Image (cartoon, rainbow, N blue to C red; front, side, top):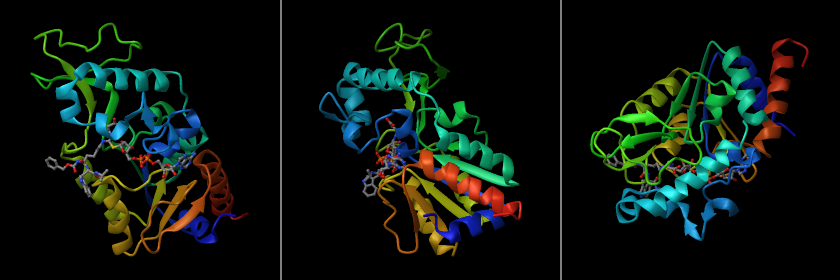
Length: 248
Ligand code: BV8
């Protein structure tokens, strides 16, 4: 049962911000960070996604990322990703803020995207800081090395304890400032500063809706749309489209 407030707010809005997390890719077969699949070879993904882990054992960390690249390379965007592409085309202003590094939003066709935590397909030279896109799976050599200077390359993602790209959060907050609602999809809302978009939206008096199999945004006032995003988002959007057409 979809809360009518969600359909009303989305039907009336002209500017929308969406925050996504690993849950939107779950139905594409990609394990979430903290769900059952969050473990890899009995390692806690959270412990591997750190500069310390990479410094201590670049080979192990690269095997973790190579595994994730192999899983994502076989995955396809799902109906949840595709619905967000339709929504982007329908609103005068639509900003997708993602914590995900799998690139499925980009493959689905999302354009106005703020990738808070970087990208699984980008590699960065640890000496020069230069970046390149490497989509080959498996990678020709592990760990990869910079073709120019021979230094180790690292995944182009933001690890725990590392700063986000400097323009990421300012752009996300600015988009939120212009929006009439925030839609939160498939995130445990545990990672900051990404999750701060929720309290910031609530403090601005804006409606916040959450699509999650287990509603996690435990902030008072968030309205939960319980269920898998691959089903809830298409259903929600079809109701909004018929409402906007004046027939729903
Ligand atoms: C920073 C890239 C400062 C790597 C990631 C104490 C309190 C508060 C904060 C901190 C603290 N101690 C440390 C911090 C800061 C830390 C942080 O937030 N830690 C948390 C965990 C306590 N944050 C940082 O370190 C950030 N940087 O603060 O820098 C700074 C400033 C200046 C200079 C230096 C430093 C950097 C954080 C970025 C970390 N990198 N990813 C990689 O991916 O390998 S975050 C990682 O977690 C992923 O990106 C992931 O997306 C993200 C969040 O997880 P979720 O996406 O929410 O996924 P999760 O598995 O948790 O949840 C899935 C959800 O989906 C669940 O709710 C589930 O129910 C739902 N679901 C499942 N199936 C479905 C579904 N929903 C819908 N449909 C389904 N089918």
